Each structure stands twice: as structure tokens, then as C-alpha cells.
Length: 398
Ligand SMILES: *Cc1c(COP(=O)(O)O)cnc(C)c1O
Image (cartoon, rainbow, N blue to C red; front, top):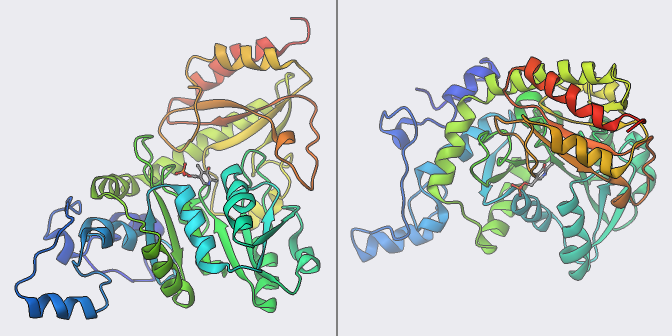
């Protein structure tokens, strides 16, 4: 199995081969679990020599990882052509905060889309603010118009595409072009698409951030995050993350690597089933809008068709005018959709969403209450039947 950096293999092939260096696997198919805190040296001279060397991919101390974590980090790097390396974190939120802390200093300003994942906004309004870093929230559909928001202290542009809950697809190439011209750093929360459907680094983004908790792990049983970046930013990201004491348990990293191997087929099925169900939902009288990046109800769907290799399984629907109780009754009545946070596992989920409570610059206007759906790997016909009976709760005459 190669130390592959081959640029001529497909992303599906890469998912299978990535990170499986012989020196780490010893020929075992899946990189094994190496648990460690202390690493023993042969002598004091050996210990001292190690302390002065670059410890990247060298056994040094458990916090710096073992081949188990390196294999996953490397695999994620290989999934982002043009990237230098990847750092792993114990959650997606930890990945987002470390990436931002590696870039920003007191006095800097961050541009953040109004559709950002809520904990990202909380981090900006909380810790970043406390450290003297200001945040300016922008309309996710701003595109090249972002140039007008850039001030003397603007240092970085955060992107999330499609946006959390409401799925606005951003014009990433236009924003990246402005950022490059103005010398700003770009960071993308790439959790929805994963590098499989949107290779962010190859498209000029500086930091590709994943909540691996979602599709990389894929089985709703591990918390994990990652940041993949370029040569220019890697050193700063790594030293910031070391200073923060970030590390990931080998068992979690191993489950991440295991999930990654099947992500291609899983995403294909999530994407196919979700699009089919989204199109069916669009025809239902109880549904006002379907916010699925591939459908024109969704702002920026033209950018989705231009830039993405496909869709994953998460989208939202806006119901026609009905009460909060009717929405709750609808979700409660679903038999195959669980009620729970997160997504990206093999199972379907439904939660009520209230974007109006989060918006800062683009007020949320909708005909009725909204619901976010994650379409799992169940048979789509069964999911449609379940939604069909559930939607009856939203009819006006009830
Ligand atoms: C879930 C999620 C995160 C955070 O990941 P955790 O592993 O739950 O911390 C970040 N970004 C997006 C878009 C998410 O959906």
C-alpha cells in the first residue's frame, strides 16, 4: 500500500488507500490502535536528541499522538489535494476554535457569515471578543461584495457552505479571490460536503475544517474534529494546537479512520436518498420551501451546481403556516426519524429549527416553522411514507 501522494487516482480510491503507511500499519489492513502516554527512550542521549528534533510523526509523548492518530490525520490531508497537513481535535468545535486562534490576534477583525454554526458564533462573541478580536457578521450570499466590508484590521474570513440550518450556498471562489487580493486568510467549515464533495484547499481556501463527528465517523458514536491547512499556515496551527494541549484518543482516531473507508458509498447513498426525498417534499401541500442546495428554493443553488461534486444528506424544509405545536406533533409522529442533535450517522434525524433567533444581519423570513432533516441509509420509500403520515399533523384543519 502506497504512501500515496498520487494525483491521478480518484477520491474513492484515495479514501481506501489514504493514511495506510506500512511503517504505521505493519501490514495490518486498518491502522491499529496504539495507546500511549509515556514513550521510553534507550538512553538519556536518545531522549535529549528526540527533544531537539522536530517531533512530527515521531513517537515523543502521548499527547503528540501515535501512528493511530497520524494515520487519520494523513488520510484527511490526502483527501485535500494541495494541503500540507492536518491536526486532529476532540470535537468539531475544538477544531474551529483552534483554527481561529491560530490566525487571529488582539485588534484583528473576523468576518463571519450570518448562517454560521451557532457555536462558531458563540466562540466569536465570547472568547474572541474577550481577547480583543472583533467580529463582523456578513450576509452569506454577499459574494465578491465582501470586499466592501474589509477594513484596516480585517484579518480573516470564515465561510460555511452550505450554511448551518438554512443551507445558503456561498460563492466561495469569489470570496477567496477577494481574500487573496487583500491578503486575508480564509477558513471554511467544510463539514456538510467533506473534501470528497468539495476539496477546499485545492479551491484556494487556507483552512478546511471538519466536524469528523459527522460523516467521517459516520456512525454517531465518536466526537472528533480536524483542521487541514497549507504549508503557509501549518506551523502556526500546529504550535497553537500544541499550546492548547489538543489531542485525540487513539480509539477515537481509529474509529475515524474506519469510518472514512466507507464514506464514499455512504455519502453517495445519503445524497441520492436526500435529493429524492427533498424533491418529493417540494410537491407536498404542507411544505412551503425545501432548502436543499441542489434545488432552486435554496439561495446559491447555482454555486452548488458549479462548485460541488454532489450533495450529502442534510437539508431543511419550511412548512406552510402552522403552529409550533403542529410542528412538534409532526416530528413526534415520525417513526424512522430520531429526535436528536448532530447528524452524519447512518440514521435519519429530524429537529425543529428557529433561524430567526440566530440572525444578525439578514432577518429570517419564512411562511411557517422549519424542520431540519438528516436522511440516513434507510430505504427512501420507507422514509417518504413516514414523512407523509407525519405531515398530516401540519394540515390547517387540525
Ligand atoms: C456539528 C457541527 C460542528 C461541530 O462539531 P462537534 O464535533 O459537534 O463539535 C461544526 N460545524 C458544523 C457545520 C456542524 O454541523
